[in-house]
Image (cartoon, rainbow, N blue to C red; front, top):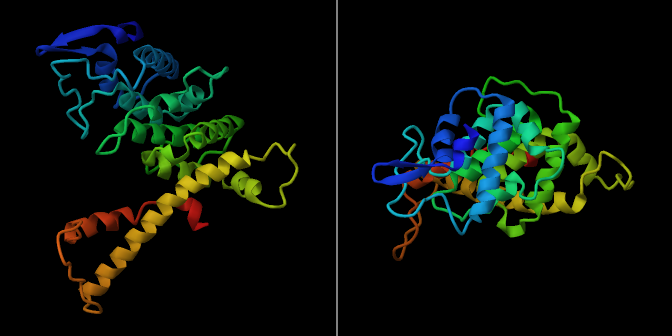
Length: 278
């Protein structure tokens, strides 16, 4: 199955890669950990040869047909389906993100190298969920899952995540900010220990890289500020509905701030930012 990944399949006047078809199936069901590891490594090797993002998974003209008929995205990016499968298989996710020897193109870097898109990249969102599974041992999409005891492998995922994502600086993928906050909250003991002024021993094995932790925290702070503004707008809306304040009059056209926009902001305000809630 992995060997068919680079094969071109002709369909409806166009052509798709085997990876694109297989990754559509990976979005559902349970998959063997070894298979997911082999598949993911081969997929990243193929993307390296394609020199992403210069040559993306669109396959030229005519455009690749829609492959995903369940989710919102078209299913053209095989990394979305693969990362979705990893999120549902925490053990496989932990193994994949902690290889025996660091790959030349880490999976997180392969995904963040994708061009920015509107709406947000589904591949990056799926990778954020896979990172949560890898660093916590819990499927983030399973509401019935109970917390797992953290292992040295989970800590290794945390260290690698901080290393790669802190290096992105202001290019930190916004789709992964909330997931990274969830990871840090799950490892709150070492996060608080590393941020404490009492942790001065550089030989302390519990210490995280403070420079990397600071850079990632700065990026998560941007999300907190954004959500604080959203909460303020929602509070103004509630006061307006109660007749406490009047809606401001606009002098001309501007950003849409009607009921639908505020309802979306209200939903955003409920996102879990556990790291900043103590």
